[in-house]
Amino acid sequence: MQPVAASLQGLVWSPDHKRAILRCMRMKLTIVVLLAFVLLSAAAFRQSAPQPRSTPDYTSDGQLKFPENYREWVYLTSGFDMSYNPAQTAGHDMFDNVFVNPEAYKSFLETGTWPDKTMLVLEVRAAKNKGSINKAGHFQDTDVMGREVHVKDQARFPGKWAFFGFEDNKPAKMVPLAAECYSCHSAHAAVDTTFVQFYPTLLPIATSKGTLSAAYQKENAATPAK
Ligand code: HEC
Image (cartoon, rainbow, N blue to C red; front, side):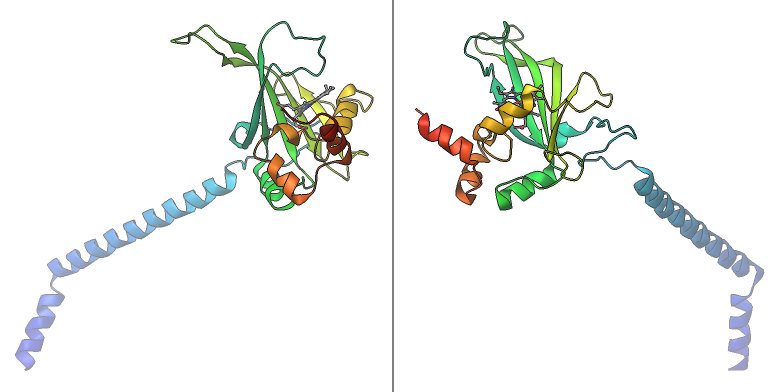
């Protein structure tokens, strides 16, 4: 036995084998260090990547910051050339698109109304009819004509909701309470001062949950849909 053990020992601890083992260990260490580096940098990236906000965010002087990622929110409708006054037309064709933050949308599906921190964005675009292969009808221009935001923030606004108009992506001041926006929305909008009667996926929910405003129901009964 002795000679076999001795020769084995000689085999294992020969200088060549030592070098081979060391090389192997170094490689393993390099792999572990590289792996740790990849994992750590992935964690750091996750922490430092800015989380897109879908709740209202204000500047220190109370202006609403523009919700940059609203185009990734839930789409509610597109209105085409809608006018609230029969004598008044804009003189050019326009689309408006309405979006809502996903958390508020989910809550609406369950309750038929809007939770605190709801944000709805109305985006206005010119309607074009000449372009590419189009021969009839209208499509939306790439330029945005305006964006308005309706925010529910019960602790901040006396009427629970407030309007903001944005000309660009800079923070905007609240539209004063005396503006027509507030009176038309509270007198005619179907759910909690929002025009759910024009949002086709939400109207059936509000109807079945019984959250339609009394004013809207009265108006609707007086002018039944054709
Ligand atoms: C005479 C009535 C009337 C007035 C005044 C009015 N709106 Fe509206 N608003 C509407 C209607 C109708 C819709 C639905 C649009 C659609 O279906 O595409 C709407 C939708 C909106 C929406 C989408 C979210 C929601 O509340 O339903 C925003 C945001 C909005 N309006 C902002 C404003 C602002 C800001 C003003 C004032 C500068 C204003 N509105 C004035 C009738 C009005």
